[in-house]
Image (tube, rainbow over all chains, first blue to last red):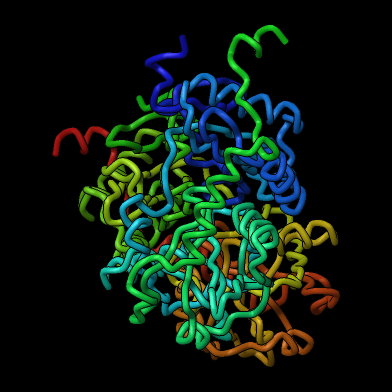
Length: 307
Length: 307
């Protein structure tokens, strides 16, 4: 029985599996003091990883772009993720993999190359990016007054923890009584929000920003679904002025799937409720989880031991 | 005797004083996963804090701007810093104070306001931002190809850990055989480097950028020193093209003081050695440390106990 000590979650740190409450990093780790970290999050749903290989692909690419090389190879990382979930005993889980710069092996060095990179992984109970009741009602989405950090300064396709601009927008959103926020870039083009991509629906056509955004796996799943369902979809610039004309807005995230919006800024969309295309895609998204193509069953602890 | 267990440094985490090796934070702390943190660093030199009140002022302002409210008030924070240094037994120390968002008290919440903010502090052996031998020879400073994150996205006067753009520049600099890097903004105006401000000297006049930069305490000390020494100094825009005409370039940081440059990009300054005004300011800076005005002696452990 995987039981009590891991029931709040299981983690892998410093080469060991530990209960999530014991998973820590030093306050002097550059992953903290320089936010010199890349990460990814995969969803375990009903005992299966969803699109695990896609998440591992993106994680590997992010590590390569930031020259982070923890000792564990891809096969090992995959096995670690399986084991974290198995130890936790969770059938619905938010599973994170993190590569940190670590600390210099040479005392006093300030060179990234001198650091001992390391891997952190953990499985915790499933968390939605937007609470379930808000998803049902349709999210109220604030348009942040501060611009998103530009792609030229920090590559948004490398999933990172540098959320200050997103947090600024979120604080504003909550002050104004909204659920969450989306940010535009300095030229007024829509980018993304804290932990999700954004889509705009106009005249039956679905559009998501071509800039300032993570290449979200759920974003890609939605683009794939649109093709299957015969909905025209494209990746293109979206100026914030287009939000005044939008029929629907929805958000996509591993941590929540397809999340319909009901309001964007001070504008009420449709009937102040999730729109029809958003709902259709939300339903299709969860049906996709049932199909075998993207599912990887979590290996039980016994199988791990026997390998 | 403050001795062995603290000799690598002493820290304050979760309300307790611990050896630096035991100072950690949870991998799920938003201070890590969203880099939702502000910090400051003060120098203890020869048993005395240098400009401690200025660092505490800046730290308090940064916390207020990010709405971070750890339970400890200013007087308590100050006492904690004293105790960290006293426990470490270090007479030269790099002393950090960090305010982190922490974790939500409400399970599953993604609202910053729901988090339990907390204070981290530590004193470790003194570390120079640029090694001493490089400071003597004059730093070789790379001009990064990626732009600094703009002020409108992330306020550079709020000292933060979001170093990705700085780290990108640093990786490039090391690839090219340089010691460190400075970044320009998207319009080509000079900003700062990883952990320091930058000054340019031209025709006996000293200039430091008016944008994209921390309001460094050492930067301010240098501006004060210029006034005392009768050197004309100003805070103004510096376009990167001005670097082609510069007589000298130097860097300023709590972690190193005044650090002369010998090369900027592919340009060799003067005799490929620290220039005369840089050296004069460097000397004046360290002399300033001897004066009583900015010095706060570290309270010994006995005094703490007796209070």
